[in-house]
Image (cartoon, rainbow, N blue to C red; front, side, top):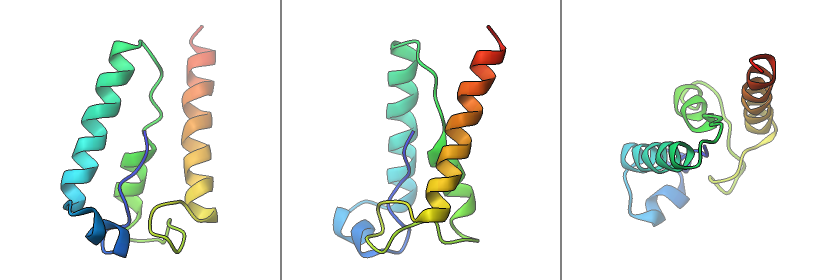
Length: 88
């Protein structure tokens, strides 16, 4: 699950969406798709939502992750895959 644009960034302003609205829309869409496809869901979006106020996770474009954001995303994805592997 991806993340919303940087909360006060130019990309968010240009989108015409509110940060909360974009975050919730992504949550709903990804959860529905994962359920429909019986797929794993790596909720990177919520981690960005929770941590982006205390640390910068975005590249200068306000959309893509910087190195710290990429590390956070990779850790979450790896944890979901490993949990699924261990449960088999």
